[in-house]
Length: 98
View 1 (cartoon, rainbow, N blue to C red):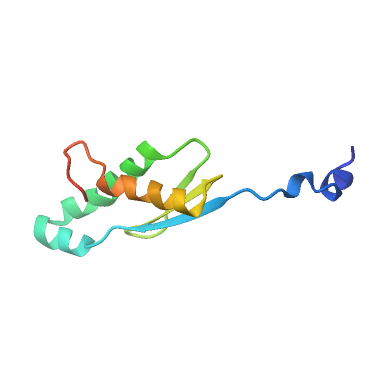
View 2 (cartoon, rainbow, N blue to C red):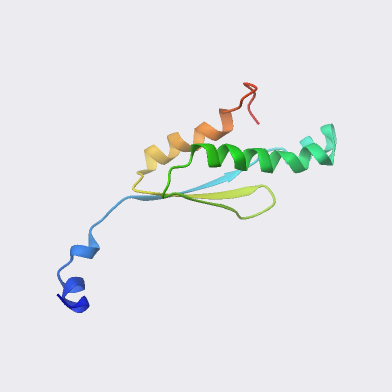
């Protein structure tokens, strides 16, 4: 089948859910002011590690600002993405939330 016919057949145009989660580390300035800049520099790195721990293979993570992250979740509905977004904020080996 030619490429044009494949596109015309609609096979490639099926709807599949895709979610984009934007995450922001709250109170990063407070972390800097209270615990010093070294701790403030570690916070985004630690949070990124948490995201990497919970992401699935096809998902894409990106740091889009000093304390902002984007997480693309293919084949994920909005409610499921919301549940996924809550996991990194509460996950920690020390039992503490960021």
